[in-house]
Length: 212
Image 1 (tube, rainbow, N blue to C red):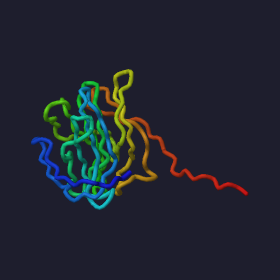
Image 2: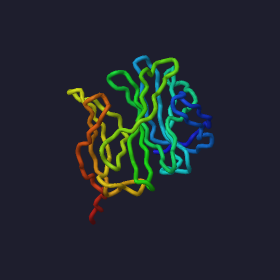
Image 3: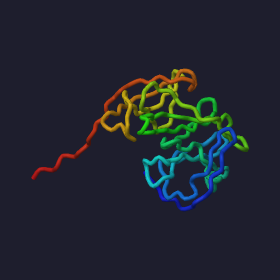
Image 4: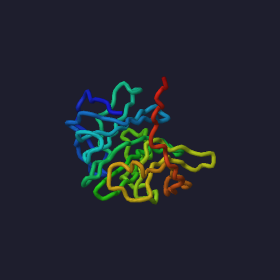
């Protein structure tokens, strides 16, 4: 779902650990919003934008936050930029059992057939200036993977994250009929992940025409 942008602002880097630059001064759309609230009430919002549409090599993921119950927000900040045709898209926010804020997003490049899940983590999202570490790849042991929803924690303590994946390299933005549905499971608080499941989703859902 895409939403029109009503206010154009200049983004600033979230912190100095990763060198990112403002590329959103002329954005005309934004989509796939994400929302998270800390124990102390800070509200974080994520989304992606840039380029003429989605998908586009210029797609970029952003973040902003509010300390007044979402009445106002700081200027959007670039969390990850596209690199050499590799777009960033579909971010989500999640606070793990340790209170850390995860910013999880996807990177995709049809020319190199690399499609991966990435993340950045903030140890103290309620700090005066929340600092996120450098981005890192979540290794799901497959050549094509992306996710949209928040992870969840099982009663065993393991983390579970829904994943769309493919067992072969995909030279396109989407795997289409080759895509499978599964989950990534982590038993070490997100340090490593194992991919489970390969459900083939129904391709079409056409309603039968009424007779008579």
